[in-house]
Image 1 (cartoon, rainbow, N blue to C red):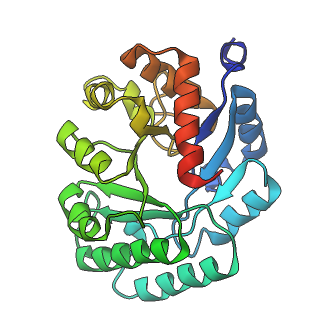
Image 2 (spheres, helix red, strand yellow):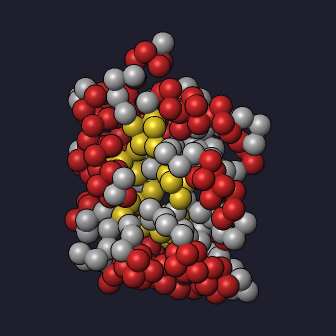
Length: 264
């Protein structure tokens, strides 16, 4: 039934970690389910040096469906290793083709020990995005003010991107949009009391793109289970319900937004 419902629509999952071990037992089947759902493109953000090869191998295996990003995730930043990690990010950018710098940013949810190093890594990767003329996928968790402090001086025509898994309030959303960035909306939109539904209704679909952040944050009715790209239509359906738009319009606008941002 799900496939029949969504076959008329085409979606893009702009943020999924399909190369992680959670998909080792059925990765190819997961990608086939995604394609069958209408989610034909899956964009893969890098995490750190341990994820380069699994991510790139998957993109080589599915070159028409999986597209890689280059970046160092903030939770992988440590005082001892971040300089070497950033050197590898730049080296990879010089040697291979990527669609974005990501995922990058600041995360103060798990640990605040390396905030200074996270800020340095974030700034340097923003500047790599400008150097290589690529958009950015920004990770922000318990850190909007810290992210904005680093990002605001770098904003302008030479920098664009998305606030991945956006979970801020309406004022923060408007700040992001005014700076020319999109909001990445995933399974959290289906959670009761998340506050995200009111934000999306207020800002409108012209400023959002769809994502799963798989294997994390599965939408209702799969909340608490492993997430996957085939669930993108569930996220789109919730946005259609919230905004009063037809599902096909959600697909068309968010897909167009993603294509324009990532030059797909």
